[in-house]
Length: 237
Image (cartoon, rainbow, N blue to C red):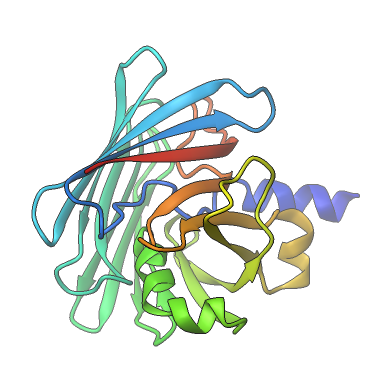
């Protein structure tokens, strides 16, 4: 029990696949509504805007419309390993990942008043950063829907390292449209798997657009806690 508690404390809020995807094949913008898996209440809304082919922006708003966080993503050097900056005004958490040559400069501040820590992470062939997992799914769409299992190293800025996750096709959750394809992202390590639930993502089978994300949110509340959410996306065609 003590081991499980320690793992959950360590991993809560760290192994977070971003739900703030820019959805590179979206025409210009998209809206995602995040509902709590515990209560069903709307906990925040994401607005995704393509500024140009490489620069994307995400704005997070409270249910009453008040903006509380923003993210800037730069896909100019890589769709799967983009650079990005994210600031959460709820508690002051700040994240920056920037590609410098063949390495990535990672800066992380937990909250207002905390010291920002930075480190350099070497690039890896199978590394995925932030919203890059959406591009990863589309790039390897055919192998994945053919049943291939693929492992990635997902960068976790708060820990200045990567964790191994496994992509594979899976059954969709209830209330998911029948015209979708679903995938799970599960930790490879059995210890991490004991503490972190798989993430389930649902994609339109024809457009390859993300329609639903179910798992741990990448944005915390004012207390610094990360909720498990069900995010539904709509596109402005």
